[in-house]
Each structure stands twice: as structure tokens, then as C-alpha cells.
Length: 279
Image 1: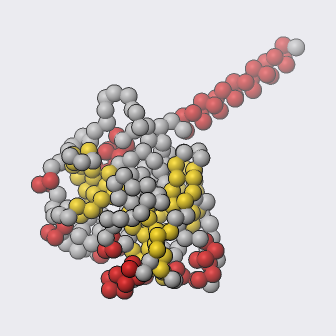
Image 2: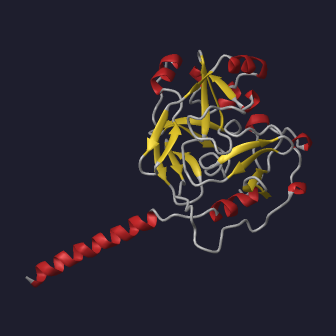
């Protein structure tokens, strides 16, 4: 009887350890992780409209979801894979807005998605642009200028050299005029969010005449995002919307004089440019 009791207690203790580990894995972080991890790659500014916003240290041709990355298909739909070391954050959390002088600025937010973009389609072409401040998936993309959009032929979706297949400005403007908003909204019941999953996989396969392989997603406990052995390694912590004191803040907050206007930055590398930062 004693041996049986010890056996039961042993497995109960194992179960408790498992629950602790599970709780630890799901523990949330706060905005401090954004402030700390992105500081080496750009400047945090205190905006009157949006609070702390981040300006990446990149050239004048940088376009969110257009520069130095590509789409891959996962269980969540089309997921943006960034080649920037900091890409795990600004392309999966928050919103981008375009300042007339300083260019793209990132506004942090709490919810993770494969990408916070709006999608359009015109015939054989698909296009996307970042969702603006306070926009939700399915919102009409009013206010989004067509030069914030990237379009590709449907057969080029999934290419890793995606930027070399972007439609040129003149043709893009015409495509944009004849395009319609796509709303392939999905719900993540675990995270309680909705997002736009992008073009239908079967349509892309039919257009390109080739199968699109669904990539497996693996959680990573470090601030990274990269492909390894045909698996997408992702860091996507739960961000606490109500963190305990002290309130998170960047260690260094710049001002607008610390950021070069876009027209004074070099157009280094175009949409495939690399950013400076830790290596």
C-alpha cells in the first residue's frame, strides 16, 4: 500500500512540474521586450498621437512587408518571413504608419499575427500593404496610398526572392486602380484575435502550376525569426496589456532631430537592403 501511495505521489509531482513548465512557457512579457530588442536597430520617439514609436535605421527605399523578406505558407495562412534580425516584432505585432517626412514608423501593440496587412487582388495579381493605426483586418483600406502597396503575379507568391518580382510603379498603379479588397479573415481562438490569412493556397498553386508546401511553425524562446530545416522558428510571446509597475519605457528616447528625413537618406540596396545593427 505504501509503495502504491509513493507511486501515485511521484506521478502527481511530475504532473505539477509539467503544469509549472507549461505556465512558464505561456508567461507573458510586456512592451519592454520591444523597447530593448529594437533599440540597436533604430530610434524610439515619443509621439503625441501614438506614444512611443520606432523608426528603423534604414535607407529611403525601405517598405514594410516589401523589403528584405518574403511570404511563406503556414497553418495560419501567408506568413511574412523577415530577414532582418528584428523582424519577429514589427511585422507580427502592431501597426505601421507613414510620416510624410520621416517615412515608415512602427507602433507597438499586443497581438501577434502572421502579418498585419490588407490584401487586394486584380486578375492574376495579388497585393498587400501594412494596416495603418487602429485599423483591423477587414477594414476598408482607405487612406492607404497605392505607393505603399506591393504587387506580384500570383505565380510568384512564395518565392524567397520576392522583391525581384515586384510589379513596377507604372503597372502597379494601374493594377491598384482595378483591384478589390480581399477579406480572408481567420480567427485564432487561442489568442482571441482575427487576422487576414491572404490568398487562397489552391488558387496560387493553380496559377503557378506548382504545389505550395505548408511550412511548420516552431516556437522559439529567443527574439528571432528564421527558417531552419524547412521549419519557421518564431518568437511570439504573449504581450501583457496591463503590466505591473514600473511602466515599460525605452532606455533612450530620441527626438525628431535624431532621425534623418527620408529624402536625406541613401537609397541603399532598394527593397532588398540590409539594416545596420547587432550581428
